[in-house]
Amino acid sequence: MRTYDNPVIPGFHPDPSVCRVGEDYYLVCSSFEYFPGIPLFHSRDLVHWRQIGNVLDRPGQLRFPDGLPASAGVHAPTIRYHGGRFHVITTGVGALGNFLVTAERPEGPWSDPVPVDLPGIDPDLAWDEDGSCWCAVAGVRVARIDPVTGKVLEGPLPVWSGTGMQHPEAPHLYRVGRWWYLMLAEGGTAHGHSVSIARARSPRGPYEPAPHNPVLSHRGTDLPIQCTGHADLVRAADGTWWMVLLGTRPRGWFPEFHVLGRETFLTPVEWAGGWPRVGPVAPRHRAPTAWHPLPAEPERDDFDGPALAPCWISPRGRPDGSWSLTRRPGRLTLTATGDSLDRPGHTFVGRRQQHPDCRVAVRVDPGTGRAGLSVRIDEAHHYDLEAGGGVVGVVARIGPVRQRIAEHPVPPGPLTLVVDIRTADVPPPTVTSPGAGGEATGVRAAGPDVIAFSVGGVEGVEGIDGDRLPDGPLPLAELDGRYLSTQVAAGFTGRVIGMYVTEGSAEFDWFDYRPGAVGDAGGHEA
Image (cartoon, rainbow, N blue to C red; front, side):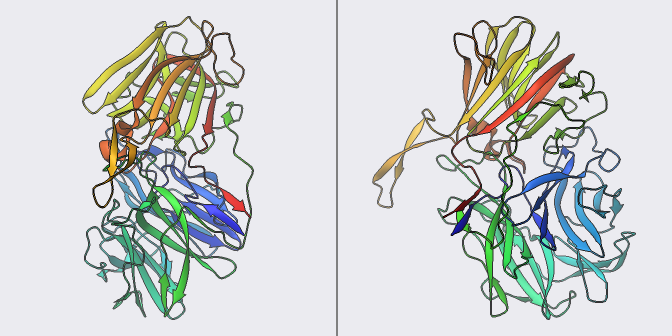
């Protein structure tokens, strides 16, 4: 029996939306303040996904103001295929509002944005039998629109806003048989998150709520996956139904902390009495009939290609002149555009942390500048391993506090900077978990993980993979991972680990990301 592990797309990949074209599936997620925007994934079985690009991949499509707050930007895209074209509709919070882009091929090129003059966020698209295009937005209201011009032709009409919980959002309309189904999220995107559904004979309503709403919620449970919601339905090629949704994997003592952001999960759907039925989302499920594993992604990027891989993202933009793959072939050259990671406008190229345990290393020559490797949530919450001025050091920015934790002298030339993130052997403070009757049930770490920093390639220090010198790596510091979590930093994103420059220019020879043994996603066959 084949099984798969959740999440199917780990790391900061929230608000998933999916469509099927033949035997191929395409999925998009929110990207918020990061550029390129809207990561786009492809799969043949709903389990194994590969990022094939980004929908908003050029500055002409996506320009954010310099002061755009963290967690603003691109929210909740919906992807649909109709009339031989792919359509993605989304909201640019703080820029653009609601807009629509299209493409003949999922790899692009995608069109320039077409504004859709509707208030609200989380827009959806669905087509009626007569070709009418309907758009639902959070609230929940529906409108008939022209998907070519973005003009609103009818509405918006108030229809159904859930069971009365806060933040009815993420609406999706589906035509299944003779019914129109309106599915939405409510209860907020934290522990109260849930999925509810209603149906009507027309997109205009009136809508009849499902008698068993919410159809999915993990609120009030001790399940390892929490915050389940913001879902989308897809019918597989074999006729079975599936749901993609966001969730989190919190760790540590109360209130628990999640550091990877909201991730993409997959769960089966059964229909009974004209309604979808969804069980709890488990860490492991029986797999769909189709089974198309993918080769493992390379652990190392040597920057030998003509363009950056689609996983690389930058806060708010990536200006020309701030980066180059041709200035020195085989190297990523970054040039400072700001003098601090504490303010917008800096040069940073990173990728999402996708595993609770992982090791990240870069080989960098800072030259006469200042450069390093940063683990960040936003400008006010990041840990930096930085080289420059003849020293390498660790800097922690936690809210209003910025402190240099450790430093060590280094000679000029290339260094290997290493960040190890682990969930085992998390040091005190620890707490004793109480049972239902107040009895002690064991000791738990208070925090979710530890982030450790070391340097290699200098004075007998070793890096990883070939930079071996006699005396082993030089540890610099270990920091508590709680302060780089959503519960501390707030917002909608997760950790991003990347390379930066805040003075002069620096050359990065390679970037190495290695998942740990804990929390790896994938499929299994028994």
